[in-house]
Structures are given as structure tokens and as C-alpha cells.
Length: 196
Image (cartoon, rainbow, N blue to C red; front, side, top):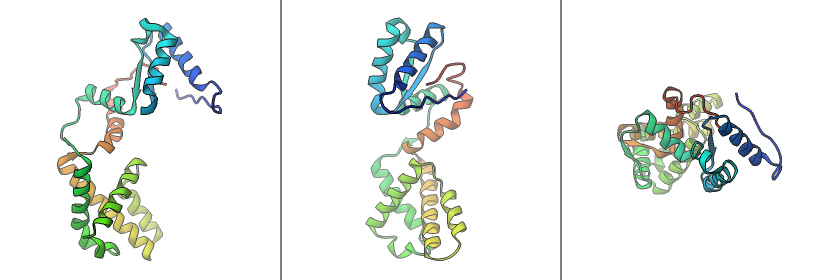
């Protein structure tokens, strides 16, 4: 069951979560606390101070990176070469050139380093917000005709080309959460564990 704990800053939301974690450990459960990367140390310390040394060993405090690591470890990991920033830049340029013949507006910019960089920034932003090439193309189709629709079309075509090139050879670190979500249900790593 999903429950929200709402309140303004310093109203006791974090304290309430730690209190619930303590209650879970007291009843013999193994809770999981998922936190942003920058709060993992402080959260682990708060859990330790509240539940004590003995019970803290049964609490998993996971940042999103560690959450992905844990799911990968349990479900068999990810096979392939992890893509670096340099790889992303090179693949972005290749994606633009590969898609060049299908571009309506941006064809003349296909050899521009600045354009490739802008496309890569846009693709990174889309991935961060779970927007797929199909989503962009659907918006282009919904807009209909005109320069804006054609620009969206070109962006979707380059983005799809980028994704195809990645799939041939690399693992994209920005897709780790998506992959973890796909594997989460089958790996059952949090089965019957309270997650906060």
C-alpha cells in the first residue's frame, strides 16, 4: 500500500519515516529506505541513531544508484559496455548523420558540432524525464504541419537513431532506473519488505 507523508519543511516527515522504520525492525521486518544520492549518508546515520546498531543491520538505505546496483545484482546484472560521456558525444554525431536523409528542417545542420551537442543535451533531458522518441513523434503528429511539427519530427528521428545505436553496443547509464523498474517485479528483491 502506498502512503504519502505530507508537510512543510521541518514538520517532522523524515522523523516519521525513521519512526516507522524503527517500528518495522522491532516487529522483525527488514525495511528499505530509498533516498536521493546526496542524502544517503545522513539518512543511514539517522537510521543507525534511531534503531540502534543491532537493528540497523536489517535496514537497507539505498540511493537510486545503489537501488539499481542491488536490483542488477539480484536479477543477474547488466551485460555490455557502459557508455561514457565521450561515447555519448560520438554516438550523437553518428545518430544525426544516420538520420540526415529523413530530416526535414535540421538537415543542413547535420555536420555542426554545436547542433550535435544541442541534440545530445535534448536527448539527455528527454531520458531524464522518461520521454521516448515515440512520445516526441506523437507530439509532432498531433501538432500536424508547419515548422514546429517538422522540428519535433527531426528531433524524434535523431533520438530514435541515437537509441538504436546505443542498443547495438552500449549500456546507457541514464537508462539504469528504467531497466531496474522492468526487472523489479520479477526479481522480487523487496518482496514483503516495507519500502520507505
